[in-house]
Amino acid sequence: MTKKIVVTGIGASTPIGGTAPESWSSLLAGESGIHSLENNWAEQYGLAVNFAGKAKVHPDEVLERPVAKRLDPSSQFALVAALEAIADAGNPDVPAERFGVDWATGIGGLWSLLDAWDTLREKGPRRVMPLTVPMLMPNAPSAAISMHLEARAYARTVASACASSTEAVVNAYEHLQAGLADVVIAGGSEAAIHPITLAAFNSAQALSKRNDSPESASRPYNIDRDGFVMGEGAAALVLETEEHALARGAKIYAEIAGGGVTADAYHITANDPEGRGAIRAVELALGAAGASADEVTHINAHATSTPVGDVNEFVALQKVFGDRVRDIPVSATKAATGHLLGGTGALEALFTVLAVKERVAPPTINLVDQDPEIPFSASSRPVPLGDGPQLAISNSFGFGGHNAVVAVRSYDQ
Image 1 (cartoon, rainbow, N blue to C red):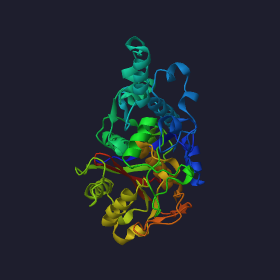
Image 2 (cartoon, rainbow, N blue to C red):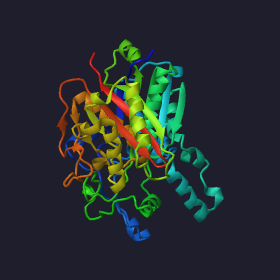
Image 3 (cartoon, rainbow, N blue to C red):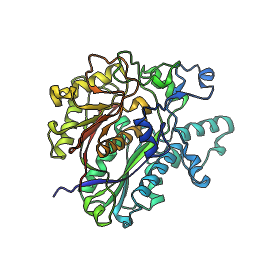
Image 4 (cartoon, rainbow, N blue to C red):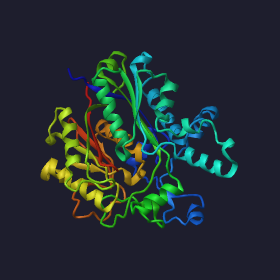
C-alpha cells in the first residue's frame, strides 16, 4: 500500500539567509545573495570570476568549536541545516533504528583535501591531520548528521552532481515507502567556492563573468544570460509517514507526493537536447504521485542561467505539458541563491514545499529581457497560486546526465 509521506521540519543555511525562514523571506523579497568575493583571489590567481553566493552565516559561527573543527565546511553546513530541521519538526521521539539520513554532496570535503595538500607541500607529511580523510570523504556530512542525532536506521550518501540532493529527497521518500524508517532527514550541502573550482568551471565556460554587477549575474531566461554563479550552503527536510506525524501531533508543511530519477547517458556535461531523461524523470515523479501533467500548478525549474541549459529545460517541459507550459507559474530561484551544486536540489525542494504551503510562486529576480525561446510564465515578483489544491515539481539536472524530479503536493488535513 502506498503511504503518504509528509514534510514536518525544514532547515537551511544559504546565501540569502542563515535559516530556512530567513532564506524564504529573502527569496520572496527579491534579494540577491550574490556578491563580490572579499579576498584577493582574482589578483593572486588571475581568476576571470571574482563573485559567488557565499553563505550569509558561516556554520562555524553557529556550531561549538570542538564540533566545527573536526568537520569540513560541507559537513558543518549539513549539520547546521539538519539541526534546524529536526528542531523545527519538534525533535520527534523516534527509535534510533527507525531514524534515517539521506544526504547528498556534489563535491564533498574540497577544502579539507586542498588544505591537506598545502600542508604536505609546505610542512611535510607528518603535519597532515589524521582526520583529513574522515573530513574530506563524501559521506562525511551524512555521518556527522547520523552521529549527532543518533540516526541508526541508515545514513546514505548521494553524489550525482547538481541533481544530488533532489535525488536524496526522492530516496528518502522511497525508503519511507519501503518501511526502512519512520523519520528521515534528507538534504544536501556544498562548500566548494575555491579558486580551483572558480577556475575550472570558468575553463568549462560555465560561469557568468559579470564581475561589475554580481547581484544580477545569475539571470535565468534573460536573452543575455552568460552562465551560472557558484553558491554554498545546505538545506534539510524532515520527512516522515503521515501516520507517524499525525500520531505525534506534528505540524505538516506539505506532502512529498513522488519522485523520479533517470540518466541521460548522453554527455558528461551537456543535457540531452531531446530532453528524454528529463521528461522521463518528470513522468516518473507524476506517476508516483498518481497525478497527471494537467494537475501541476507550479514548477521550480533547474534554470542555472546557462545559454543552452535553460533552453533545453523548456524544450523538455514543453514535451510534458504541451502549450500549457507557458501558463504554469515557474520560479528560477538560483537567480537569488546562485548554484549550490550538491545542496541546490534540497534547497529548491524546500522552497517548493513552502510555495505550495503558502500558495505563492517565488520571484525569478533579474528577469529583464526574457528570451523568446524560453516563454515560461516567470515573474520578477511573487505570483499567487490560488486557494485550491497545489501540485508542484522541482527539477534538478546534473553533470554526468543525472536527472531528478520531486513532486510536492499541498497538505490539507
